Image 1 (cartoon, rainbow, N blue to C red):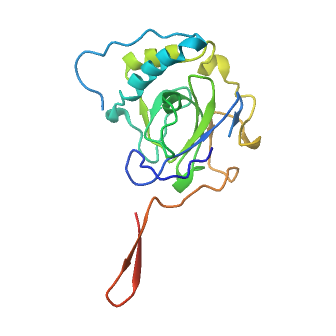
Image 2 (cartoon, rainbow, N blue to C red):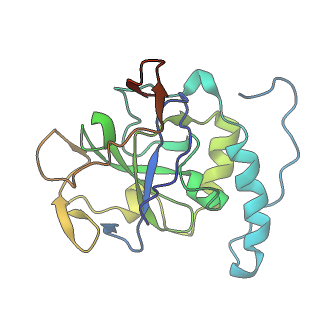
Image 3 (cartoon, rainbow, N blue to C red):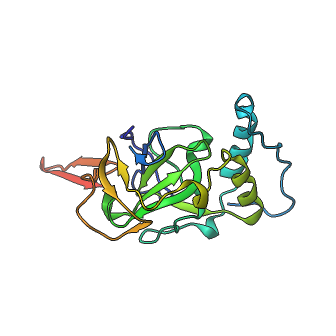
Length: 207
């Protein structure tokens, strides 16, 4: 799913793009004081709602002192919370995960493309996206929400290529240096404002 509807990223300038993936290889401010009570994590399919409660608390724990800025990226194997995403709410599962692969400068506006593995085992790519590293308390809670065996060391196989879409744009490894092996990014602006002057001239501003 390519998100096209406008939304603000962590900086409030351009939309962040997220594309969902369906299998193992193919990618198609924290408050001070006591931590809140957290429900017990369940690995049972029937208790996914309970895990959603925990994931919601994790996402809302974003620590803006641990946010990545444009031109930087989290490292493969690190667990993160994403910033706001385009296209509306997709479920708390889609806002957290660990970094599988970073494709430098392959995303929209020259951003890095980051492949994230989510707690339910799915993989998605994120472009022009801000990320937040987790505080230790929430990091352990997030790890416990993942399906059994889904960890950076046990689940990922860097001898095999990760691809985008229908097996396209394969890349092998954890960090991919800039190259031309990626989709044409969507660099459309968030908003265009047209102003008509008194003399009839039109001025188009992009913001």
